[in-house]
Image 1 (tube, one colour):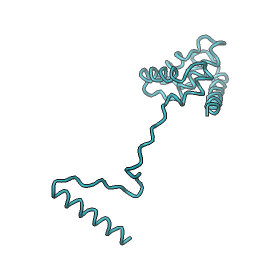
Image 2 (spheres, one colour; image 1 turned 30 degrees about the vertical axis):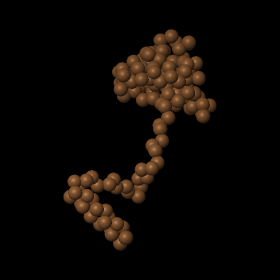
Image 3 (cartoon, one colour; image 1 turned 180 degrees about the vertical axis):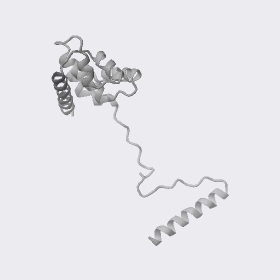
Image 4 (cartoon, helix red, strand yellow; image 1 turned 180 degrees about the horizontal axis):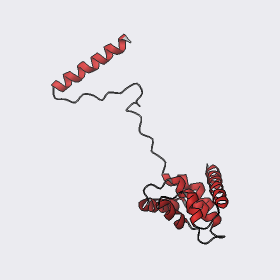
Length: 148
């Protein structure tokens, strides 16, 4: 503990001395920070997280990423999960119920409705809406696991 106090005092003294000379103090690193020599790891492109879902939906990750960005411009509160669920539900139910489209679901979400409330407003029963949500989550999770 004493050595830490001494080290901090020396760093403070060096910073004051450099400041008095008009030079910037060297950057301080806490014990928890990364050393300056390690480069930042690049974040993976977000569209790569759409890889499994895109395959399931019969599209490309880039096309899905582009559609997500477009949907986010219309509804900045839209989450990736909501977007994926909207696409999965539309994919799963669209052939049986033409009113259920990705855009119709996104419009409902954009108006402040939940996915379930949106599906009910598109003609599904409570039971069918709940089942569609659960199935979409299972499908999205399975697609994500398959892509890894």
